[in-house]
Amino acid sequence: MSEDARPAGGFDALTHLDQLADALPEVCDRARQAGVGGWLIAGWDPALWAEVKAAVAGSGGVLALGVHPWVAGRVSADRAVELLDGEAPPVVGEIGLDHHRARSDADRAVQRALFRAQLAWARAHDRPVVIHAVRAVPEVLHVLARDGLPAAGGMLHGLHSGPDLALRAVELGLHVSIGPLILGRSPHRIVASLEAVPPERVLLETDCPEQPIGELARPTPAALVVVARAVARVWSVDVDRVLKTTGDAARALFRQPVERSGRG
View 1: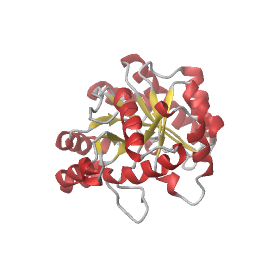
View 2 (view 1 turned 120 degrees about the vertical axis):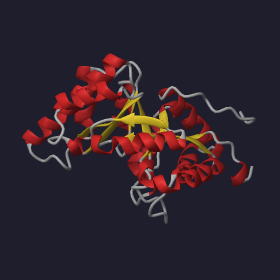
View 3 (view 1 turned 90 degrees about the vertical axis):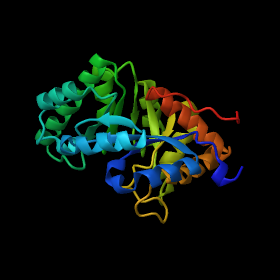
């Protein structure tokens, strides 16, 4: 099947399309032609949530709203819960821990309180979560083991850990999302995780337009196919199979209709 005839079974599990608001129609058309028929748009800073909601309305994407660990200290845990009460988003994220940004015990405690408060809101309201974890995957998994993941599930975005942590994440109920890091110079831990994790628990993301993909400095969801090709090589299947398997998993997690096509 040619590139321009590919079924739009792929789903980009994390984007920031609010940053491409001026070009949304073209961006969406290009994605569908490439085989990507859905995307999640994540609002990580309440100051930008209005732009994120506008991008969702303009693109047909799935809305996620959360208070990112980078915003911890500016938005308190209590305030985050108030904001979520006001918006009631269908997906909560990005939330999580970032120990690259928070170096002191005090700063990490602030991030942890913010993370736990939003997890509690998601559990109470049956919402899936999108989790950011940088240099903090064991700590994130510890919080989930202690507090519990929402019954609706969630995803660990931008997987960069080895198979032990990836499998632990899956055991706790998470999906793991593969992004541009699989195209980097040292993808060995990601490849090992892909070989260990059940395919139905794997999602794909571009994190566009913030993360370069190949020669694309500011990619769009159409570049998800580049990530899918790397996964296809690991799984020894064709790229359309990867797009459909991961796309179906994303749609199930985010409660979207499964894309139907003539191919099985």
